[in-house]
Length: 173
Image (tube, rainbow, N blue to C red; front, side, top):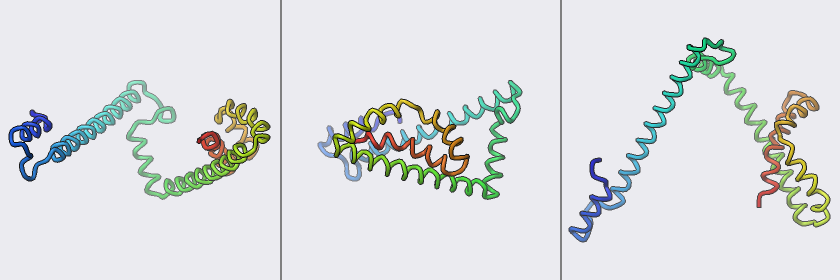
């Protein structure tokens, strides 16, 4: 628009004292929101295309092997293959199940621990130093240990998810 909608609605309101029938300030503001949303969508698509072009150029110019950095077309072809044969859905379901189990375990343990620590000064004095010290250890450092102790199966993954969820839930008001 060459003329902003607020300007038009302001002129109509000042000249007549009321908005013409069927037109309101909300009408003009809605149009402005729609135009802004369309512009944001266009910018998003353009930025994704530029990113894909740069990615493809890097792969071609540096002549990188696919196991280091596959080209976008190779990634798309592989995605379509695993989506078509059903393995993507199967593996996604396994991951979702592990995340939900870990989130439930971590949040449940944190709520119980938080309630106990909040209600008992003795428990708070006993556990607070350990809770603070355990927060200093990054989960990324514990993940390999959990895999060594519990194996590469579901349990180690659920425990990693539980650890990630535990402390934010514990310290949340």
